[in-house]
Amino acid sequence: MKHIPFLDGAALERAGVTPVEAMAAIERGLAALGRGAAQQPHPTALSPEPGAFFQPLTAALPESNLACVNWLTFHPGNAASGRPHSGGLLILNDFKTGEPLCLMDGLWVSHRRTGYIAGLGAKYLAGPPGDVALIGPGAISDFALDALAALGRLGSRVRICGRREDSTRAFCAAARARLGVEALAFTDARAAIAGANIIVTATSHAGAPFLERAWVAEGALIVMIDRLRLITPALLARADRLVTNSRESLASWGVKERNVESFPELVAGGRARPVGSGEIALYDAGGLAVADLAYAALLWQRLNERNAVQPP
Image (cartoon, rainbow, N blue to C red):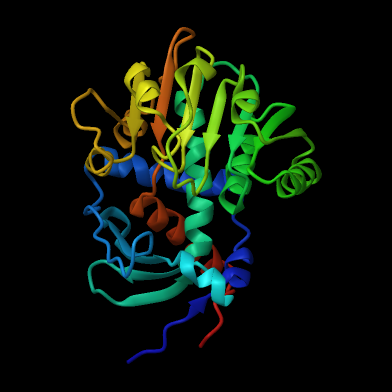
């Protein structure tokens, strides 16, 4: 069997792909999915215990002759023994021959892809510029802020809400240093999102939903990286628009009997549809295998152009 190069985070960083370039590649992948030119089956999952999973995200872009599987894992109990709770291994293949081209750190790809999709959500769905609020400071949130900043949607001030004041303040300090914005720390979600026109939720919240309709200003877009974990039934019922990356996936959260817009189809149409001034829009920005593939393909191409793929 041929030797397959493994590209860890350090190797992928050497590709030098900027957030703008990554978002453009992901946008093309979403557009291909929206017009039916990509293959992406609904993912299955294995669960060794409640709250833990193995999930293979698979996709193909026949026009680019590439396919991938990103084998993602989450085992929250690992933290007690000092092991990472999350992992991922992405395999990039030639679609026609099946030849494996490389292995990548799938979690590195997934974290960035997730944040960048949040930025694309703002590009197509957000209204006029205003304050941004983020609930759930963490690794993915860094990339969501980077994406919003790269698209000119972050403004000069962002509000960050987290459960722990010390870690939230540290996140704010890092955001100020990296992006040059005023970052304000909150532990009260209602105060953090008051008046914000873009709200990003990126939590691991496992309790009852708490984000209420009365807390959200009209004209706001809520980008739900964490799916519907924070959204109360009342907010869901009274939202004017619900946009998703996958209607099938959203149905697994119990949302079946309403008009749901497809974000890939919107991107394929090439026209933004911003939330209206008197509306509230929810964007279910859950993971997409085709986005992983489009991003991984760009990384692989860039590294090969720079002769930066080291032999195994």
